[in-house]
Length: 495
Image (cartoon, rainbow, N blue to C red; front, side):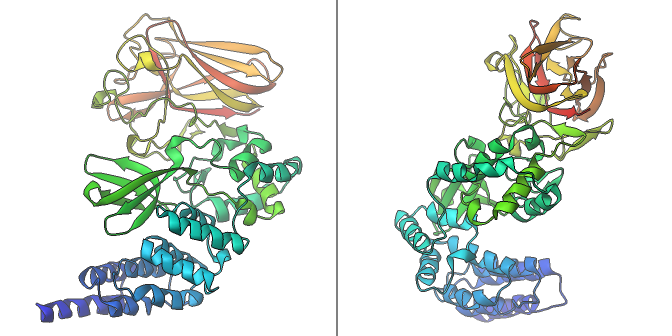
C-alpha cells in the first residue's frame, strides 16, 4: 500500500509540475496530493515551489489554498518564507490561508510581532477576520498588534464620519470614481452589471445623497441588514471559515466568503457557528482610500443616468423562490428566474435581487386578506427616489388572487409619488386592467407579459408622473380589494 500510495502521489506531483497542463487540472492535482499526504510537509513544499512571479494569479491562489489544507506543522513557516516573493494577489491568498486555521493564525501573529509581515499587507476584510476570530485570545492579540502598527481603524466610527463629511460637498470625477469602484468594491458589489454578487447591488445607490453613502461606507455595521452579517464557522478539524451564511439545510451550511467562494460544511463537522454583529463589509476604508478617491467614488455612485434602478432590498418582504401565499413549501406559488442577473424589457433595465437560495427577501409582497402569508405582509412600503421621473417602470402587474379571480376593476395597488415640495400624486392600478394572477400567463390590457417563470408570469407596466419635479419617495400602497400584489423591480426613467 505504501508503494502504491507513493506512485499515486508521484503522478499527482508530476501533474502539478506540468506547465503545459491546464491550470484547473494542476490545482486539482495539488488538492489530491495534499488529500493523500496531509502529514507530509514535502508535498506541500513542492506545491509552493511551483509559485513564481510568472505564475498566473488564479493558479498561485489554487496552489496556496491546496497547501493550506496540509496538516504538517512545518508548512506555515514555508509559506511565510515565500510571502515576500509573491505578487500582491498571491500574497493576499497566502495571508488568507493563515487565517483559515487557528494554529496558522498564531504563526501569522508571531510574524506580525517580529515585523516579518507588515500590518499594511493585510486587507481590510483580513483585519476584520482577525479581530473577530472565534478564539478571543487570538482576536485580542491581533488587536494589540494592529493598534501598535497604526493600521487599526478607529473604533469611533461617528468621529471618522464627521471628519470626512465635508468631502460630500465636493464635486468629484465620476470616471475616476468608477476605477476606484472596480479596485475597491467590485469584488463584493455590483454596479451596472459589473462586479460580484456578495454584498448589495450598488446600481441604485444614486437615489441616496452623498452624506448617506459616506455613512454606509465608513460605518457599514451601523445599520447592517441581517442578510449581510458575518458568520464564522469553526470546524472540528480547526478550520475557520468567515463569510455570509448563504444557505443551510438539515445536514449542512454554506458560507460565502469575501472572495465570492462558497464553502459547504457538514453540520457534523461544525464545532462552533458564531454570528457577528459586524457587516461582512469591513470598517476602515479611510485607511485605504485617499480623500480624492473617496470624493470620486461618491461622485460615481450618485451619478444618475437615463435609467435609475431603485434599491428594494430594505423593503422587500418575502423571498420569491419559496411559496408566497399559502405555504413556503408549495412550488406553484413561486416566481423564480433561472438567474438573477439584470434583465431588460422594452430597453428598460431592471435590477433583480438575488434571493441566494431563499435566504434573502427579494420581492415586495403587500398585504392581502386571503391565504396564510399575505395577511402578515405590510399594507405599504416607501422607496427612496430623489430624482425627477419621466416614467416609473415596474416589473410587477401580478398578484395572488388576481384576474381572472377577484373583482375586475378593483384597485390592487396605489403608486403614490411624494414630491420634494411635500405634494403627492396617486396612481391607481386595477385588477383585470393592470394586474393579473401570477399562476399562469393571463393577459390584461394595461400591462404586458414580460417573463415566463417556470409556468408563472411577471408583467411590465409604467406609471407616468404628472409633474417634472424631483420625487423624494415612491410609496406602494395596497388597494382595498382582495388581491396580494407583487413588485419585483422598479426603474425610474429620468427626463
